[in-house]
Structure formats: C-alpha cells, structure tokens
Image (cartoon, rainbow, N blue to C red; front, side, top):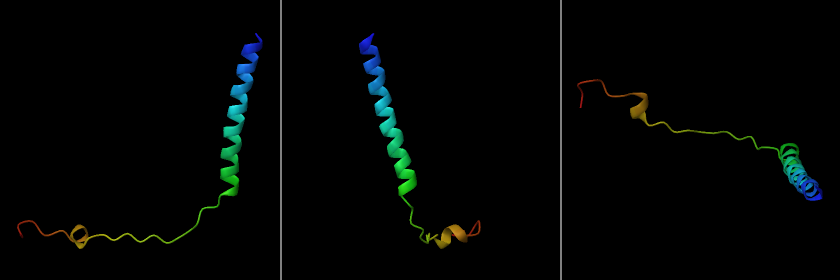
Length: 53
C-alpha cells in the first residue's frame, strides 16, 4: 500500500507543477498587440469574367 500512496503523490506533484506552470504563463505573459496586413492578389478580388482569357 505505501507504494500506491507514493505513486499517487508523485502523480499529484507532477499535475500540480503542470497546473502551476500553466497558471503562471496565463498570468505573467502579456501578448503584444500589432497590426496585421494581409495582401490579397487582385485575381482573387476581381476574377476574370467567364469566356475571357
């Protein structure tokens, strides 16, 4: 039985470390805001009329 408790304790510690690291990342890391520009080819905006080639 002691090995089961030791195993569960190790699993609980690993889970606590993962949870703590995720919590720290969500609280301490602030994303940067920036403007995004996407170029769209004119062929996609103005496709050629059918029959023209």
